[in-house]
Image (cartoon, helix red, strand yellow):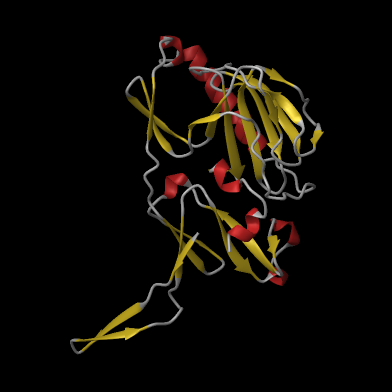
Length: 265
């Protein structure tokens, strides 16, 4: 996380006066990451999902990939989301039915998208997120968060997840405590699992060959949830791992490691 202070300049009778003060101070953040804004906890509702780091309270602001080059504001703080080149990913899919969808398949994807969106909006306030994720599967990272995607040389939506390639049947584990709130078999995602980690932090797992959990299950960190597969629209077996915070897809790699919250300061 990079912070900077913007200074104010005033012209008076052709003379440039330099005045440095904090009225227009602003912060700079990276797309796909969480940015902590310090708050006075007494001024806010406890159910709003603030986190305590050391002895202070913070609101974590998800910095959306789609808002690069823009400012967002919260509690008198102004955050500029830097533009970043994440690179690109080019995929070749030979099955034309998976690229140029029929009307029936298109309608199916719209229905499935609505199901997932509804689940993302129904997160629990009974679970407190720990923000100490472990990697859910062993394997090779085949595509990172933020890459521009081209399918058969045609531009598509950016890749806002982490792909980890592994042999079919490799075990997938919950990266932290949570609750299973959605299981499905979807056109794009194949066998799909969505975990609620509490207060707007959720994670999903796509293309599984098998699912080891049921909707409503309470999970412990490290508990098996399924196995790597190649269901849905894929070019080979891998885990497509997506992390959401307040419905914004953030970079899963940014959450890995111990004491993640302290690294934000």
